[in-house]
Length: 312
Image (cartoon, rainbow, N blue to C red; front, side, top):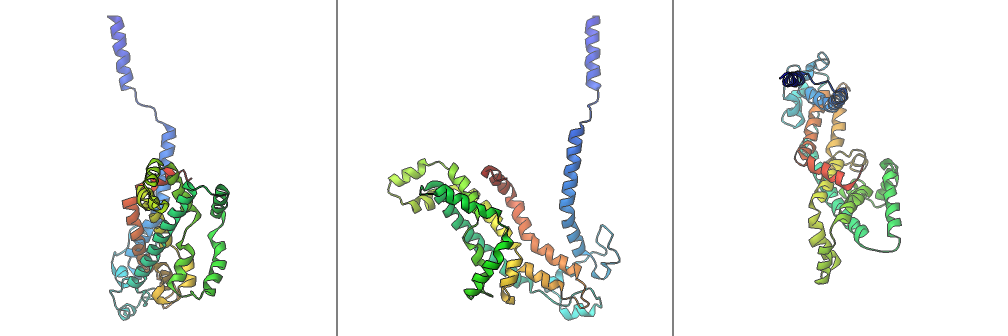
């Protein structure tokens, strides 16, 4: 009985013994929380500034919540308020100009969509050729092509600009999309990883049945790559949507101006020269909504596809 009682006492003591604090997990969670805060807080501050009263932006700059929240900034950026009414407000930091938001939004969608379709299609074709066809110096050519990943994009601006100017495409839509329409080293490498892992049996069976190589690619291989292809399309769309310098250099006509360039111009329209921070942040919030929606609906697929490709 004494042995049984001692065993029960030990069991009771072990049951009520508190768990030791795992310092490693605590440190990881603290660092993760700080990383999330550093990432999310700038977006919150943009939204807070966009909702703030434009006449009190500097007097309540340190407050975490928007002072006297209003949708006035969104209304004037979207062209829902007459500029003459804005001037009548008497605030020196309110821009009386407009950015033709819907025109520039249309231009951004057209620019990003055309580049997305062209780059996804042509990159998939090039990746399929590197993954399936055997031709002299294939691996060496692919290695040289991948060295483009090590070249900063800014280095290519001058030769691209000179070429577009010689073609007479400055100030045209084709001049905007030409440098990035065909393919990029990352896009080709990304799709090639998936084509290599694709089973060859279906392709060989189709070739035995008389299908052409292009028919095999278009009807069999490409439909099986819908997930990776969608991921590449999303990454291309978001990158093109956020592009600023190249559209700024080429698209000088207001009818071709994209939203990122238009926001910078809107910043300089304040009568006193100081940036119209509330209006600028309102336009920024609206401009990032499409990319946020894309990540909300397709973000998980993007992460899974990048991990599967082996790209680090």
